[in-house]
Length: 244
Ligand code: CAA
Image (cartoon, rainbow, N blue to C red):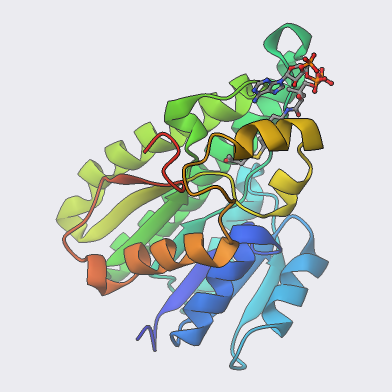
């Protein structure tokens, strides 16, 4: 059970982020659900069991917004000990058609956002001398690669390197840091993929289906909880057998 734990989740308004909020809340955690769209984060909180959860609008690529949220939490003596970095975007196109601006935006959100949230969370945990668990949502594309995803793949590979380095720095404070590498999951992000490409992708998945967001959330819950107390610095594929 996660009773008495505060969980801070980005990208909480849909998909894997929302499913993680629901599972963590079911296990007793108090959830701080953040999303670029504050209304989506609010809808997630409305779907949770329990009453102490809060929602906030947050653009994780804006370091000053992340800092401001963590300083407000500190003022309320709230220290999240579970951090789920789930906020992510795609900017899919063939490299030859890509723009540097889109590449930069994808990296700023997926990798820069993970950096800012993890940095502020670690500072708060160290100051409170509290253990913690950070779970970063990477992607199977980090290691597999994918047509049309040079920007996204680079950002998610960056998340894996970031996770492993942070795990080494934080181990002595008992702050663990792991990554999950989901395959194709039934979320708004994957639903936006053209149907003909989706069919090509499905044909390559050994389990012959997309994941449900709840299946990814189960692994996130495990890594967030003390059940994984001896795990840090890992990046775990959860992809229905695709490039595992
Ligand atoms: N494998 C094989 N062929 C592919 C392919 C793939 N993964 N993706 C595209 N192609 C092929 C298309 O079938 C098409 O072939 P034909 O010319 O024979 O029809 C050709 O490449 C051109 O594709 P489009 O017509 O779609 O070209 P476009 O310029 O309009 O768009 C694209 C290109 C933006 C890359 C588009 O194909 C696309 O969005 N692809 C999906 C990319 C993708 O898989 N994104 C995953 C998002 S989910 C996610 O990222 C979550 C996660 O962590 C896994």
